[in-house]
Figure 1 (cartoon, helix red, strand yellow):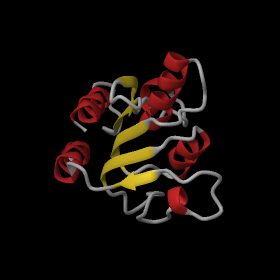
Figure 2 (cartoon, one colour; figure 1 turned 45 degrees about the horizontal axis):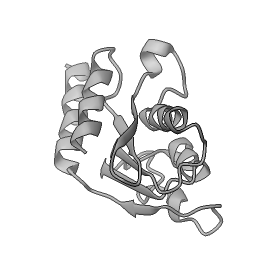
Figure 3 (cartoon, helix red, strand yellow; figure 1 turned 120 degrees about the horizontal axis):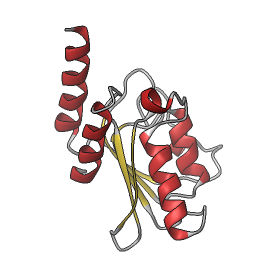
Figure 4 (tube, one colour; figure 1 turned 90 degrees about the vertical axis):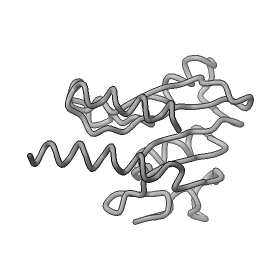
Length: 144
């Protein structure tokens, strides 16, 4: 989670919501990294998870990321949870819960939905306080 948090800090540099993600292969090596880039790229798909999944697919030369783990600082939204399912990610680990748009247990649970094509293992609340503090500090500064 420390690596995902480091990625999240990079998002702040271009005034984006501090969410970071990494993809680990089956041996625990980082094969993908990403942070939110919606503002700098003006891209609605500029979510940390999508960037990390794309990076991992590029690194491995395959879209199926079986055996891999997606680690993200904030509970994935429906789009990102769907991408993790589509990529056949084995595990999703996240920090802070997203009470407004979370799709891995809070608002919806796409990752464990019985209609989903694939069901990754989910671990939530990892370094949740640190992940939540980064987000809270960012939004407090914006409201200023």
